[in-house]
Length: 268
Length: 293
Ligand SMILES: Nc1ncnc2c1ncn2[C@@H]1O[C@H](COP(=O)(O)OP(=O)(O)OP(=O)(O)O)[C@@H](O)[C@H]1O
Ligand SMILES: [Mg+2]
Image (cartoon, rainbow over all chains, first blue to last red; front, side, top):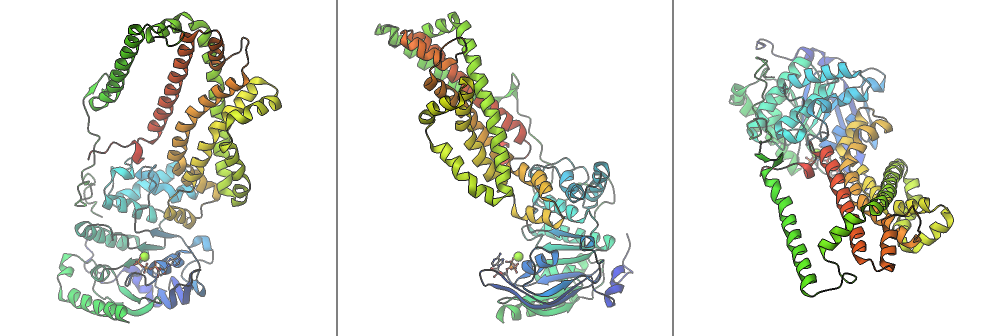
């Protein structure tokens, strides 16, 4: 697929329109008094690839989970102007830090899970799940159990499972943190390709400056205690990005910039 | 994704599991892997050694058979009395299996109810614990009086002994489902029933099976102990009564033969439950997987 002439994502044109998710003055205080997130304002544009970058404990996971609807904000609102009124229509995919697969089910059944839960007929579910597995590069591994797959392959199954409903938004909480660098690079590239062709909105939580610069159009830098947004950086480099981008001056410049903001966030 | 050519679908993750792990075919003898044989042969060897010493000691010291019969005499008695003993064994085993089945049904049903409602658990679990800690010998006479029917009382006693491990293990298993997976089910709008069926019950399976292994033996013990207490005679007697009877008549070889049958039954039940467990878990659970390192 030769897409080099396209400088922005096809869906990125909608950025100026209504955002998919709109986070307004959201704070979260846990029962034990910890203020995990305070006064976060953030718009997630339709089709955007956004990274949430920040030190450990700055509330990235908490924020992501609230967007997913796992736990509600203490104050503030999270609206979905870019999605239908119907809450059930807000399909989203979620990828955890660990693959979180069902060990008793093979790869295909794991990917089928969201379809099974929505009572999609079995033959159709199988077909769609197999398609998704092929899309993440796991054709031929349908009947393998999680135990028989490598860490990177399990993560691929997890991504396939998150995408099998063709969600509008894919939320990922440090999905590749536990993988080695080579595997991580491969999965980053494959994720970008998937994003490019499936046109979902991607929110990617990470600790890694390099990963966030390589992947995203926008980097939201967060600071800890209490968790808040420090900076919102644009990464205007065109897609597709590859090894060339990793060695470019632009990349180095962006990494320095993001790393500076992150230092500020840690120091603050 | 790197799906340019459909055949090259193996992801190059750069990890050692990139190649699909194969189950290494180990050479087998009579269908069992070579490495498995010592597990069978070693206990058999020890058994033969001990039996040989026992027979030798009994003969050397000329111990009378009403004190301690040698293993050969026990074997002869087992064959000679096979008719009565096997009928009794069948009766004991029937009660054992019925009790075990009841323990499985009630144990799993209660465990599921408890995980659906904390209130039910708080209200009922203490009573399950009381049943468990009360010595069965102590309450067996009461149960025999209340139940009226002797077979029913034996069944209840064996059930009481057998059901708690299944209950507590299944509760533990149902609560052990991965927290993130529970979140995932929630995200996809799973109903309680779906979460139970697709997540909690499969997650509980290894725990339930561990409970079943314990309860299988306990059901047998419960059936035997209850019959000891009941001490009933007649045509419908189990092995425990045969032991009592033979004891009164000083037919000690027969006592040993009956004991042997009980032990072998216990071993058979354990092996059967272990086999079931292995077959159900072999594809995915750590306990049933053979690691190559
Ligand atoms: N359930 C909870 N109850 C109480 N405090 C919590 C809970 N979950 C998170 N916290 C606290 O909220 C803060 C933010 O946690 P969160 O997990 O969102 O951070 P994070 O940015 O994802 O960190 P990491 O990068 O290490 O995953 C932390 O101080 C944490 O201790
Ligand atoms: Mg986190």
